[in-house]
Amino acid sequence: MKKEGLSPKTILGRKMAVVKFPCCYLQIAAVLLGALTVAAPASADPSLPCQLKIRGHSIKCFTLIGKNGGAGVRFDTPDETVHLAAGTYRVESVELTGNYTLVPSADDRKAWFEVTPKGPNELVVGAPLYATVSARRHGGFVEMDYDTVDGAGRSYRKSYDTYEDRPPEPTFTVSVDGQQIDLGKFEYG
Image 1 (cartoon, rainbow, N blue to C red):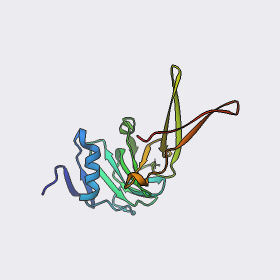
Image 2: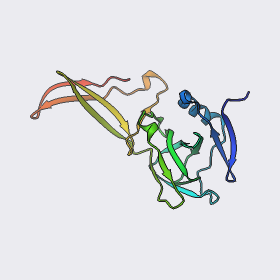
Image 3: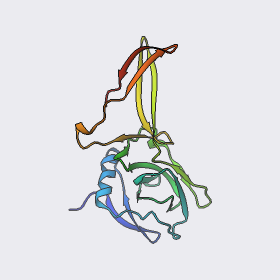
Image 4: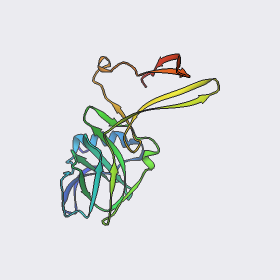
Protein backbone atom coordinates (compact mmCIF):
# COMPACT_ATOMS: atom_id res chain seq x y z
CA MET A 1 0.00 0.00 0.00
CA LYS A 2 1.49 3.34 -1.04
CA LYS A 3 1.42 6.11 1.57
CA GLU A 4 0.72 9.53 0.02
CA GLY A 5 3.65 11.94 0.27
CA LEU A 6 6.15 9.53 1.87
CA SER A 7 9.25 8.42 0.03
CA PRO A 8 12.80 7.54 1.08
CA LYS A 9 15.31 9.49 -1.05
CA THR A 10 19.01 9.93 -1.37
CA ILE A 11 20.07 13.55 -0.86
CA LEU A 12 23.73 14.42 -1.36
CA GLY A 13 24.64 10.73 -1.19
CA ARG A 14 22.77 10.11 2.07
CA LYS A 15 19.62 8.01 2.54
CA MET A 16 16.97 10.20 4.21
CA ALA A 17 13.28 10.23 4.82
CA VAL A 18 11.64 13.01 2.86
CA VAL A 19 8.00 13.94 3.11
CA LYS A 20 5.89 16.71 1.58
CA PHE A 21 3.35 17.76 4.20
CA PRO A 22 -0.13 18.96 3.24
CA CYS A 23 -0.95 22.04 5.30
CA CYS A 24 -3.56 20.46 7.59
CA TYR A 25 -1.95 17.08 8.27
CA LEU A 26 1.44 18.05 9.68
CA GLN A 27 1.18 16.25 13.02
CA ILE A 28 -0.36 13.08 11.54
CA ALA A 29 2.24 12.95 8.79
CA ALA A 30 5.04 13.41 11.33
CA VAL A 31 3.77 10.39 13.28
CA LEU A 32 3.52 8.31 10.09
CA LEU A 33 7.02 9.41 9.14
CA GLY A 34 8.44 7.75 12.24
CA ALA A 35 6.72 4.46 11.53
CA LEU A 36 7.14 4.15 7.78
CA THR A 37 10.43 5.65 6.60
CA VAL A 38 14.16 5.24 6.78
CA ALA A 39 15.59 7.70 9.31
CA ALA A 40 18.58 9.89 8.62
CA PRO A 41 21.59 8.71 10.59
CA ALA A 42 22.67 11.23 13.21
CA SER A 43 26.37 10.53 12.82
CA ALA A 44 28.99 12.69 11.13
CA ASP A 45 28.63 12.71 7.35
CA PRO A 46 31.18 14.87 5.55
CA SER A 47 29.17 14.77 2.30
CA LEU A 48 26.60 17.17 3.82
CA PRO A 49 27.89 20.74 3.93
CA CYS A 50 26.46 22.01 7.23
CA GLN A 51 26.81 21.03 10.86
CA LEU A 52 24.01 21.75 13.33
CA LYS A 53 24.96 21.58 17.01
CA ILE A 54 22.15 20.28 19.21
CA ARG A 55 21.92 21.99 22.60
CA GLY A 56 19.75 19.58 24.53
CA HIS A 57 19.62 15.91 25.43
CA SER A 58 17.34 12.89 25.92
CA ILE A 59 16.17 13.18 22.29
CA LYS A 60 14.85 9.93 20.80
CA CYS A 61 14.16 11.62 17.46
CA PHE A 62 13.31 14.95 15.89
CA THR A 63 12.12 16.18 12.50
CA LEU A 64 13.05 19.42 10.77
CA ILE A 65 10.94 20.91 7.98
CA GLY A 66 12.67 22.84 5.19
CA LYS A 67 11.16 26.14 4.07
CA ASN A 68 11.89 25.43 0.41
CA GLY A 69 9.11 23.02 -0.48
CA GLY A 70 8.39 21.76 3.03
CA ALA A 71 10.60 18.63 2.92
CA GLY A 72 11.05 16.88 6.28
CA VAL A 73 14.30 15.37 7.59
CA ARG A 74 14.17 13.05 10.60
CA PHE A 75 17.10 12.30 12.94
CA ASP A 76 16.95 9.31 15.30
CA THR A 77 18.98 9.40 18.54
CA PRO A 78 21.04 12.36 17.34
CA ASP A 79 24.61 13.02 18.45
CA GLU A 80 25.62 16.47 19.68
CA THR A 81 26.10 17.47 16.04
CA VAL A 82 24.02 16.46 13.01
CA HIS A 83 24.80 17.11 9.35
CA LEU A 84 22.35 18.45 6.81
CA ALA A 85 22.11 20.59 3.71
CA ALA A 86 22.19 24.39 3.94
CA GLY A 87 18.75 25.95 4.15
CA THR A 88 16.00 27.40 6.30
CA TYR A 89 14.33 24.98 8.74
CA ARG A 90 11.93 24.76 11.64
CA VAL A 91 11.32 22.06 14.24
CA GLU A 92 8.26 19.97 13.35
CA SER A 93 8.34 17.12 15.88
CA VAL A 94 10.42 15.97 18.84
CA GLU A 95 10.21 12.82 20.94
CA LEU A 96 12.17 12.61 24.20
CA THR A 97 12.93 9.70 26.48
CA GLY A 98 10.33 9.44 29.23
CA ASN A 99 7.46 9.76 26.69
CA TYR A 100 7.62 13.55 26.29
CA THR A 101 6.58 14.92 22.89
CA LEU A 102 6.65 18.41 21.41
CA VAL A 103 3.32 20.22 21.19
CA PRO A 104 4.07 22.78 18.45
CA SER A 105 2.30 26.13 18.77
CA ALA A 106 1.45 28.54 15.95
CA ASP A 107 4.56 30.55 16.95
CA ASP A 108 6.74 27.40 16.75
CA ARG A 109 5.51 26.88 13.18
CA LYS A 110 6.81 30.38 12.32
CA ALA A 111 10.18 29.94 14.08
CA TRP A 112 12.45 29.37 11.06
CA PHE A 113 16.22 29.24 11.52
CA GLU A 114 19.04 29.39 9.00
CA VAL A 115 21.68 26.65 8.59
CA THR A 116 24.77 27.76 6.64
CA PRO A 117 28.10 26.14 5.80
CA LYS A 118 29.92 28.96 7.63
CA GLY A 119 27.95 28.47 10.88
CA PRO A 120 27.83 28.56 13.78
CA ASN A 121 24.55 26.63 13.60
CA GLU A 122 22.92 25.76 16.90
CA LEU A 123 19.50 24.40 17.85
CA VAL A 124 18.13 24.43 21.40
CA VAL A 125 15.73 21.51 21.65
CA GLY A 126 14.83 18.72 24.08
CA ALA A 127 15.80 18.31 27.72
CA PRO A 128 16.30 19.84 30.16
CA LEU A 129 12.62 20.70 30.47
CA TYR A 130 11.37 23.41 32.81
CA ALA A 131 8.03 23.73 34.62
CA THR A 132 6.49 27.16 34.03
CA VAL A 133 3.40 28.91 35.33
CA SER A 134 1.85 31.96 33.70
CA ALA A 135 -0.90 34.10 35.25
CA ARG A 136 -3.30 36.55 33.60
CA ARG A 137 -5.91 38.70 35.29
CA HIS A 138 -9.45 38.65 33.88
CA GLY A 139 -11.49 41.13 35.90
CA GLY A 140 -11.71 39.67 39.41
CA PHE A 141 -10.24 36.32 38.34
CA VAL A 142 -6.71 35.14 37.76
CA GLU A 143 -6.17 32.53 35.04
CA MET A 144 -3.07 30.38 35.63
CA ASP A 145 -1.51 27.99 33.10
CA TYR A 146 1.07 25.31 33.85
CA ASP A 147 3.42 24.16 31.07
CA THR A 148 6.59 22.13 30.54
CA VAL A 149 9.01 23.82 28.12
CA ASP A 150 12.51 23.35 26.72
CA GLY A 151 15.25 25.99 26.68
CA ALA A 152 13.75 27.60 23.56
CA GLY A 153 10.27 27.85 25.13
CA ARG A 154 8.69 25.01 23.11
CA SER A 155 5.93 23.17 24.95
CA TYR A 156 6.10 19.41 25.69
CA ARG A 157 3.52 16.94 26.98
CA LYS A 158 4.09 13.61 28.66
CA SER A 159 2.20 10.68 27.16
CA TYR A 160 0.71 8.13 29.53
CA ASP A 161 -0.47 4.64 28.62
CA THR A 162 -3.50 4.81 30.90
CA TYR A 163 -5.33 7.39 32.97
CA GLU A 164 -4.12 5.66 36.15
CA ASP A 165 -0.47 6.23 35.10
CA ARG A 166 -0.87 10.01 35.34
CA PRO A 167 0.53 11.67 38.44
CA PRO A 168 -1.80 13.85 40.50
CA GLU A 169 -2.53 17.32 39.13
CA PRO A 170 0.10 19.92 40.07
CA THR A 171 -0.97 22.07 43.03
CA PHE A 172 -0.48 25.74 43.82
CA THR A 173 -0.96 28.11 46.73
CA VAL A 174 -1.84 31.81 46.72
CA SER A 175 -0.09 33.87 49.39
CA VAL A 176 -0.19 37.54 50.33
CA ASP A 177 2.62 38.85 52.52
CA GLY A 178 3.64 35.28 53.36
CA GLN A 179 0.10 34.36 54.47
CA GLN A 180 -1.62 31.56 52.51
CA ILE A 181 -5.05 32.73 51.36
CA ASP A 182 -6.00 29.96 48.91
CA LEU A 183 -4.81 26.75 47.25
CA GLY A 184 -5.83 24.71 44.25
CA LYS A 185 -4.90 22.23 41.52
CA PHE A 186 -4.21 22.64 37.82
CA GLU A 187 -6.62 20.64 35.68
CA TYR A 188 -5.30 18.35 32.96
CA GLY A 189 -6.08 19.49 29.46
